[in-house]
Amino acid sequence: LHRETEFDYSIFLGANFTPYKIPGGIELRTNNINYLPIDIYDQLCFNRKVLITKSDLTKDLRCGPNNTLLPCIENELALYVAQIIFQNRFITLHDFIQTTQLIAKHQESINWSYLSNLTENRSWSKSFWRTLSTIKSIYESIYDSDLMIPTNSSPIKCAFPYFLNPCS
Image (tube, rainbow, N blue to C red; front, side, top):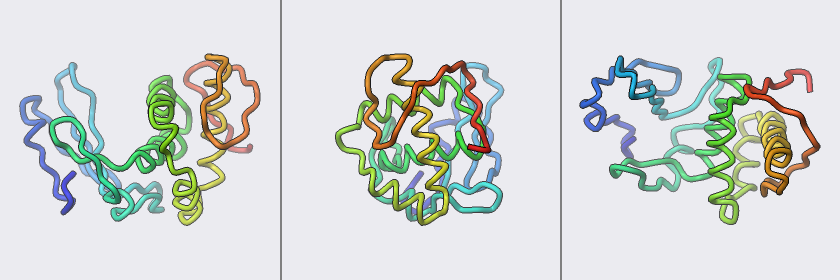
């Protein structure tokens, strides 16, 4: 993702990726079984509701592999949780590992009040914190240690995929 939000597919050409339009960006797919599809967003929206804007995604970009630009840690975490809630509607083992590794690696520097404001302003704060609470509970039941998320958790029995309860 470039600052002008133009997509540079050149690093994917060796794998014959084909771009497909998805809400808020593109998905790069290939027939090569060695590669997973890659979603590249310039905003994140589900059911026409914008959850993370272009200006959110380009705030405090950081450099990733192959000099690609990545969103800041907080926006990356918001992307992961939004996909769990609105796209998957359950927590896969991959989602769990991806989210907990990001939090564990950056737990001292995550700006939780920024995430609170971001999700509150886009009207999905309750879902965001409930999902993080569930992830924290699963983490604590597996590892018997605290994942530093400023939310309550309670003991939980889990199996993957962990289906979210839409009524809670």
